[in-house]
Image 1 (tube, rainbow, N blue to C red):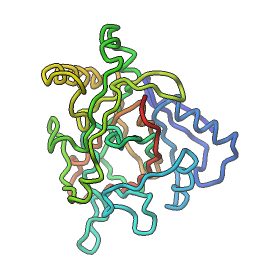
Image 2: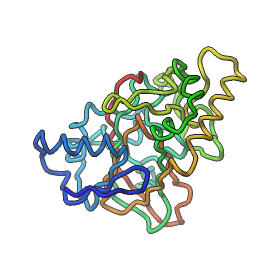
Image 3: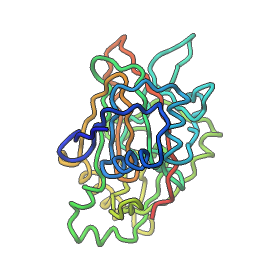
Length: 281
């Protein structure tokens, strides 16, 4: 297994490993350490079947089944399909999923630990995924802001509004699906249990308001954090290739898809599995 940096800031590319085989505990511990230390990991040239992707993902913890069940794999509901293909008049998957800044399942009491995407079909251009290192963003905060965030919680809401700075997704939730997404409050600065480091946990697409302060102060805090975290030094834009399996730590990163820039007639299909995390502290 070779581990190479994806960028100067964060992220790693792993070569010389086949994710479809069964790993020993020692081998898996090494993979897990690369994941924790680098926050974003790309495994190149993989040929993962749906069952093999599920088996690998389960090594990191229990898997979530997405509430947008119409896009789940018909035989493997743990797999959520991201695709702009239409088969027999029906979308194969969600075409514009995650097209706003967020951390997966931040709207749940136990947000996601890891997301794993398996690239089955990638267009020659467009469809990049943008990432931000939220631990580095926390480290760069002025001490006064670190002190201000200590003890503050914010409400997280699934797609808190239809559009966030031009980012949006077109899917509408049914009433039953809306009932599965009540508001939840999480710390604005969370501690990553594997490292003890802190990370900002505020995302323009899901973080709605700060608990226990006025609307004016809430807006001030969140707008500062939204601007601060999106500075170029914390960001890495990932360009996909077919056969890439990419995973990231939702506890210490946020991300945004760029699905609306795909040229006509170009298709993008990825299978996603999501590992449940712990309640943020």
